[in-house]
Length: 250
Image (cartoon, rainbow, N blue to C red):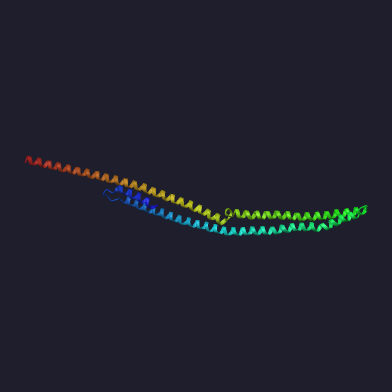
């Protein structure tokens, strides 16, 4: 960004390229523009270097997230496998209870059939059947409750795993901090560069004023010198004329 300012500076310097030497004020202005332009360039380079570091930090954080994501995906698969085994065990327990109860229920039904015609025996048999069925129902209710609880827990665990994976980039504190630092550094750098450019603009305005002042001073000096020369010439002419008159009268 330095060359445009140097080019402008050279153009402004030409305003005095008429055989005159720039005044001390103009030379000081040109030196100030050069120094402030160098500062602008240095600040731009420093900002570019800092933003490069910030982007590197974001890249490192992103790589770390990828590694973390792989761990979370592995955890998801582990949880799915673990819960698959657990739910299978729950279903197997339900099936085993149903199978185990079948002989008992079958025996109760067979006894009822055998005791046909015996009211007292049938009443006892019916009570036993109802008790066995109630016991089986209670057992199955408990097992199915366990299965329902485990299913809900499985869904919650898998959902949490999936959510952790999907929101990893948005919630990782290191990546969030790195991105925010890039934003903050860029903003601060732009403010500094804007101030540098404003300073250079002021420098150039001051240079133009000093150049104008020098041109005015030179013009006034030339005008004064011309007036003095004209006065001296007129005085010489008058003296010569007087001498001629004196010679004529002699």
